[in-house]
Image (cartoon, rainbow, N blue to C red; front, side, top):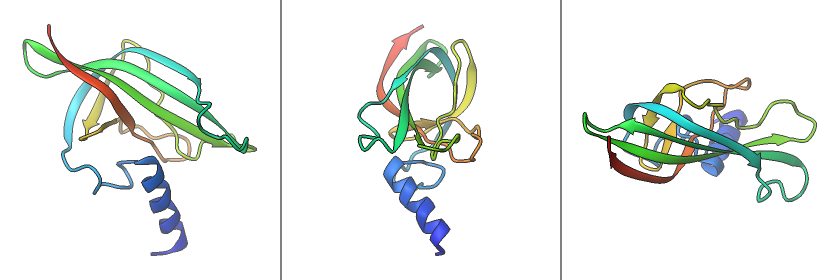
Length: 134
């Protein structure tokens, strides 16, 4: 394994990216995800050494589970950009309210297979999920 691959693997281990690290989560299912709200704020718990900036994206939405129920989700992704760079080291897909997206449901996260400027996409961690009747 060359040094670039080792670095990508280390980043994947740290951030839990399913594109780079698949063994951590086993069950994968393709879903359609409807976004109902998106918020972003500074992630003050990251970059405590002031050598980077971080934005936390919080997304609410749902996926239809059956003809009479759906699963509501609260998702979170943190995008970290080193100081002096215009591109994040691991980007979050920027989603929009009232948008429908093809996604992959993992055991503990949801991935939207859309690339960012540097090509690396972080997964959205599932903070909560619940089944509701339509």
